[in-house]
Every structure is written in structure tokens, then in C-alpha cells.
Amino acid sequence: MRYYLAIAAGLCLLAPSAMAQVTLSPAERAAAFRAGGFKLQGGKWHACGDPGTASYTAGTVEAVKDLNGDGRPEVVLTEGSTYCFGNTGTGFKLVSKQADGTWKLVTESEGIATFLAVRGVGGWPDIEIGGPGFCFPVERWNGRAYVLNRHQYEGKPCRP
Image (cartoon, rainbow, N blue to C red; front, side, top):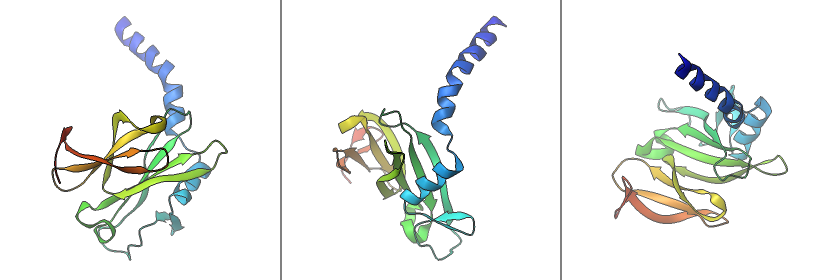
């Protein structure tokens, strides 16, 4: 019983900081989508220009987390569509809250973003961009943009 109480108490101590990183106000959420190039249409966020195919999934907040350790949140926005993203069927946009409270698009790509432990300039994590196949590009922040750094599969180098 004491074990469970200790775990519960520990979770209560962690919850406020974790909740602060995963909760966006409606205004922040809208600003993040707008920074990612999305437009609100019919109550849903759209960016890729899909004309309404059956595969389309409107924009969603996939994750909210301080990725680079600056104390401000980054948001991963995703949208699904084979019309826009081919066989991958999904794309992502990474936006970051700036010191002045505005939001800025950091990077975007077709595929599924996986943030790795390896870091580039300013503490930004490398991003493995997944999709069909077995050899995925990994991009690294160079201080201005995410650029291709290598290809890997299950953490091992590969050739596309």
C-alpha cells in the first residue's frame, strides 16, 4: 500500500510540469495551426490542399513538448492524405513558440516525425522521417534549418 502511495505522490509532483507542456489554450492552438500554414475551414484545420478525398484527415495536434529545452513548447501538427503525401499518407509540421509569444514554423515534411536523442545546434533533436520502406532520412538542426544528416534503419546506417 505504501508503495502505491509513494508512486501516486511522485506522479502528483510530476503532473504540474507535464501538464504545462501538453496543454494549449484554444488561442495558442489556433496560433500554432496558423503558423503551420493551416486554415480553419468548417471547424477543421486544413493545409495540404486535398480536395476532399476519402483518405483525408484534417490537421491535428500530435504532440506538445519542449523539444529544445528553451522552456517554451513546440507543437507537432499532422495531416493525413494520400493525395497530398503519397504512399506515406501523412505529413507533419513542427512549430515553436517564440520568446515574444508568437509561433514560428520550424520544419515540415511528408512522413512521420520521430524525435531522436541525438541533438543538433541549440539542443534541437534529430528527426527521423518515417514512411514506407526500410531506410529513413534523419534531419539535423544546423542553427537555421533542419537538413539531411544521414539515413538509418533501426538506428543503423543505411543507403536509400
